[in-house]
Structures are given as structure tokens and as C-alpha cells.
Image 1 (cartoon, rainbow, N blue to C red):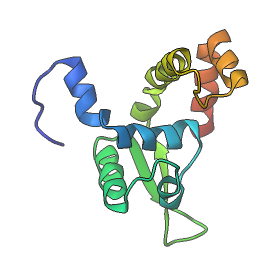
Image 2 (image 1 turned 45 degrees about the vertical axis):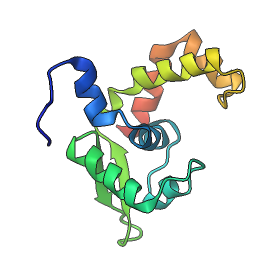
Image 3 (image 1 turned 180 degrees about the horizontal axis):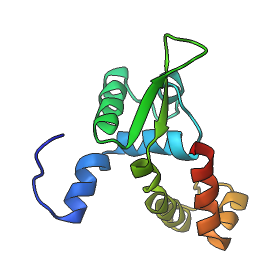
Image 4 (image 1 turned 120 degrees about the horizontal axis):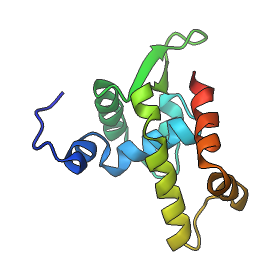
Amino acid sequence: MMEKRSHCPFVFALDLIGDKWSLIILRDIILMNKKFYKDFSNSGEGISTNILADRLAKLECAKIIFKKRDSVDKKRFIYSPTEKGLDLIPMMLEMVLWSARYDKKSAISADILKLIKKDPDNFMENIKNRFR
């Protein structure tokens, strides 16, 4: 783990998850149910393999995600969120709501948006239960 630049809560969070690629990987794992390296590299945003490998290692080192060898295909790993990673769900959902409000072409479906707004705690708990 790197030395902290400051104890400001914003700096702490941004140092761990503040770059776009880390957030997109977390989105893919937590919200899109992706779990393999190939899943992330095939996401539409076009992450390069060296950045992907670096961000996965960084998130794992920060204990936000963990990896385990796939029991079906021993050559690949399954990436999952830790409790620390799952604790980012409220922030991620707020980003979704904020983006839906200000980006009229947001890719979030109206049905999902309605579920989040109606009962965000239940929505978050359902996501968390997929990983427990």
C-alpha cells in the first residue's frame, strides 16, 4: 500500500478508486456481474491490457477486490468484491443517479433507475447478496 498523501477523506478515496479505470472495473464487477479478465477487457470503454492488469492489482492490493483461481478453467481467475468493495455501492448508485439526472442519454434503464430511487437500501442489499 502506498504512503498516504493526506488524511483528507476525499484524497484517501481518490487515491484508491479515483481514476476512471478503477471505477469502471468496479462497475463491471459489482453492477454488471463481470468476473473474468476477458470480461473487463471486452467492456466498451477500451481499456488497454497493461492498464487493466495494473488497476486489478491495485484494487486487489487495497483489498477492494480479491481474485481466486477458477475451478473450471485453472488458467483464469475470478475477480470479486470484498466487503470493503461492496461498501462502495452507495457511492456508485449516487453516481448513477447523478448521471441519469444530468445526462439525458444515460445508458441506465428506466426500470433500474426506478428501482434504485424507490428503495435504494433494498437494491444495494440485493447486489451484496449476490456476492455473499
